[in-house]
Image (cartoon, rainbow, N blue to C red; front, side):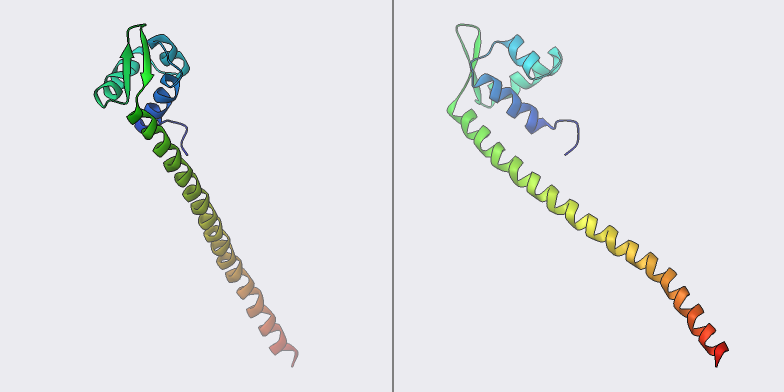
Length: 121
C-alpha cells in the first residue's frame, strides 16, 4: 500500500492503542499523530462509540471498538491479497508487452532472413 495511512488505518491504530488503556499522550506518540490530528480522531472515535473516556484519564475500547478492529483486520488482509494479485496481473502485462516489442524486432530479423534466402536461390 502507500506510505501514508488512510483515515480507517489511523482510527484502527488509535483503537489498538486504546485497547491497552491509554492516555491521550500515549495515543499521540504511539499512534504517530500530531496533537491536532489526535484531537480530531479522538473526537470521531468517541462520537462513534468506539472508545470511552474513563475517570483515570484513560481511553478504553468499547465492544463496538473491538468489532471495528476485528473487521478492519479482515478488511486489511483482503486488501493485501488484492494488491498482491493486482501486482501479479501487472507483472504479467509487462511480460506480454515486452514480448510484443521483442516480437516486432524478431519479425524484422525473420524478414531479413527470408530476403537473404531469396537471394541465395
